[in-house]
Amino acid sequence: MSNDLRFMRELIAVRGRLRALRRGRINIFHCHNPNRVLALAFRRWLEDLGDDVVVVTSLSETTHFGYRLGLPREGIWYEVFNSDVYDNCVNPIVAGNGGRVLAAGPPLH
Image (cartoon, rainbow, N blue to C red; front, side, top):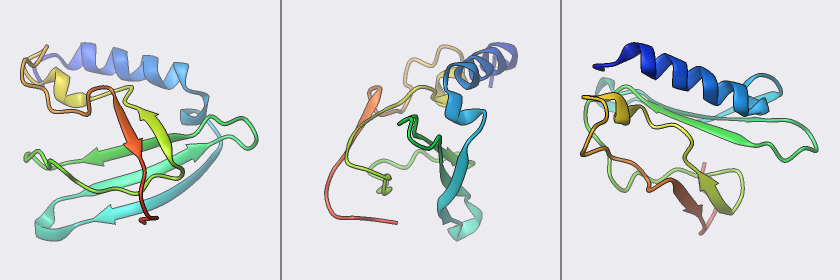
């Protein structure tokens, strides 16, 4: 990352905006480690408030397009932070989800 300070400031701001990142329940629902690549997804939520947050991480240097990941419920999930942006900040060829993901289809994970 070429701009570590900006990365950390913006990551801390996301944590400040999303209550479920500061407290609540946690469920690690996906971990995949073939070929020494770590992918982890976990859900944080506050009971009865609807503040579900899913954190998806990957330590791989490879971008995985079309990666299937089951989300806790159907509907639109918004991408609020993408660390790929900070590689040669602002990365002109950032890989992401266009700001949101539509969860549909059969249950997974």
